[in-house]
Amino acid sequence: MIRGIEVKDEVLNSFVDKLLNNTVLYDKFPIEIDLFSKFLSYTNPDYKYNSTYLGQYVNDFLQVCQMLQKKDKMYHEIFSELLQTGESFELMIDRLFFAEYFSETKKCGSEYTSINISRLLGEEVEIRVKYISNDNEHIFCKVYGDYKKAGIAQAIREDLERFVSMKEEKVQEL
Image 1: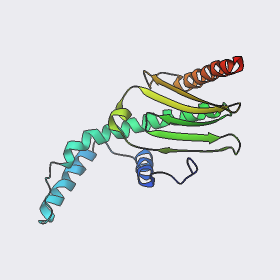
Image 2: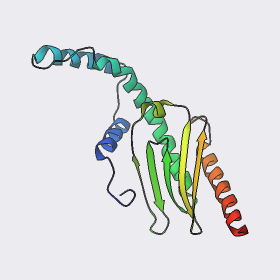
Image 3: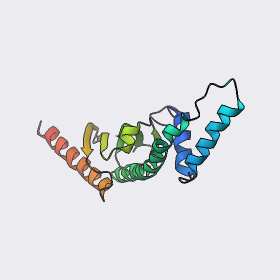
């Protein structure tokens, strides 16, 4: 359960899960797509299909598969790092990956909300966190320049903790 309701898009999350947990043979995939495309064209006269259509998307698909493997690992590292704070939060990364943690019940979950190719293939990491600390809700947003940077998950947690500390100091001053 995410956000108190069932998973928003089970089909999308099943698709992502299959991409992450199945091996795509990068050297054979283009040949198999070409064969399948021609099979559709030649065996079904009622099917108005251009045998070159699917082949146009092979490189995009292979890039998405490779990047999803890398970024999914990073997304979960960020989620795990934020769990160390012990506070409730909702996390959105790259407008693709949503995760949440409820400190009162110790329940957590994550899901993909979309597959936007340009965001997934991009170098930047956009972080949005709704963080609840001492009964105060804080919204933290920041774009990090390079998803490959070592220690990015820890840097995000440290930036969030600094931000929350600063905001709570201002609340205490009032």
